[in-house]
Amino acid sequence: MKRAPKPRRANRPRSKPLWTTTDHGSPIVVDAAHFALPGRDRGWGAQSDAFLRFNEAAFQELSLEPAMKAGREGPALQLIPAGRAGAVPLRSPQTGQVVAGVVVKPRFGWSGVGAVLNEIGWHAAPRFCALPLVPGSGREVPPWVIAGPVVSRLSAMLAALRRGYEEVEAELARPKGRILWTPFVRHLATGRWQAVPCRFSELGHDSRLRANIRWALEMVDGGLRRVAAGDRIAALLCVLIRGLLDGLEDVKPVRPTTRLAIGNSLLDSGAIARGMEALGWVADERGLGGGRELDGLAWTLELDELWESYVEAILVRECALSGESMLVGRKGQSTFPIAWDRGSSSLQQLVPDFVLRRGPSIRIVDAKYKAHFAEIDENGWRRLADEIRDAHRADVHQVLAYAALYEASEIQVELVYPLRRSTFEALHARGLDTAQARLLHGSRNLLLRLRGVPFGTKTDAS
Image (tube, rainbow, N blue to C red):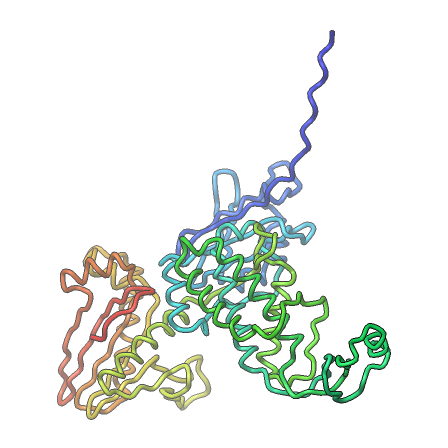
């Protein structure tokens, strides 16, 4: 008796590769075999130019620098990360279809970035890119990375809502506006003569849009609650969402249609554009309460700007205690134009990040998203790599150039570097979380200060 043949297993689609690294970390080696390139050697060969051309936009968004390196099996393509975190897709040089993805994680960890974003109010949140979904990034990126900006956009959208007239249908005891006679006749036949169906204009917010926002918030809230028990940032976002939902109790949740309607509300154009886009992401189930858990939106986060915003929040708290006034460079408050006598130059102005004043004293602070401080204090100056030494010298020279712009009896220039919390606590216990040197030149008294601050953790003023 012959045995029945074993059923053949269906060919499962191969998962698309996802390469990961950290900002300023090790280069990613992109294997040409994943792109099914033609040729016997299966290497990059002439296809490298096409690959770089198809993925140029993705490399620019994530500040990835492609470089060809010689290897044992021929040319190897490397992607060198810089100061941005995020996720982008990679396209095939033959078809242009997405076949892989890249995720650059923050070197200070997701929890540190989440704590910083939560403290500064998500105004320096990740920026979403006009690129396809990134395969597999849903498992590598915490849900709040995308959910946080969405909640922030919907919150701003609600705040921008203004009262306007919209048509409302309701059953009233006293007629108002236009009576809807057809349904009213049916009411008479059943003895409900006291319920008069009416259509009228009423001053209020766009109820349809608010119903769409409530639906989106509930979907995001459901996705975050699945991980909130073990993720503090997700839990904090859930609290924020519940507060927004409390103000939407008068409407029932309604899923947005493919063409979202604005209604008659007068809305801020910027807030409405960003909010409507966020509603579309949730409606399309792009990792926000939907079923596509493997693929995620393409996004990027400028970590230098994030660190600068966090240092600004720290300095604001310090000014409240010290009585200092502060000028902020990104707002154009501390800009010094440079007037060249011959033609133009690439350097047109000097812009200190922060300038703090109190009486005759000036404090100039520059936020640097680098690991110099930890390297200097843990390894010592002599053991530092030449590249780190040169970068640190450039930081010091830059902030000393800022000091030359001001006339004051006491000037303090300060470089603020991020530290892991464990590193900060170890250095703080030994009194090494700050280092300073005094420079005396004529009547000028200049204090140079290096300061380490834990990334994503509140610090007391010092």
